[in-house]
Image 1 (cartoon, rainbow, N blue to C red):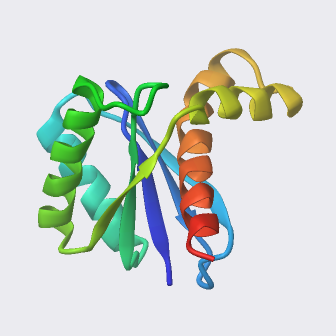
Image 2: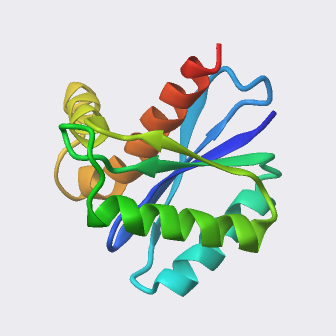
Length: 136
């Protein structure tokens, strides 16, 4: 089963993809888009292009586990992505993924503009790997 995950951002949205066995996640791409409508279209189209069978969207919860405006937006966009793609959409807690992504990139000595362009896709791969691990 191929699963695509999404780390929704305000300007950059990271995407990741699993291998066919659903065991390992890897970064796929970063979509730079400010329009929610065009973002939904691009994410859904990319998921279909990659032959995904499901989409996992990062749910930005507050550190205390509550959901704020960002979580509401993520749920709304996830529903629209599901409608556009026709694929099932699951939500995955994304607390700490951006911090972890920065740590991974630091360990790989990726800095500056390269880091800025890759951090969202790395965060998406962490979200997806967390989801895959939770399903075992």
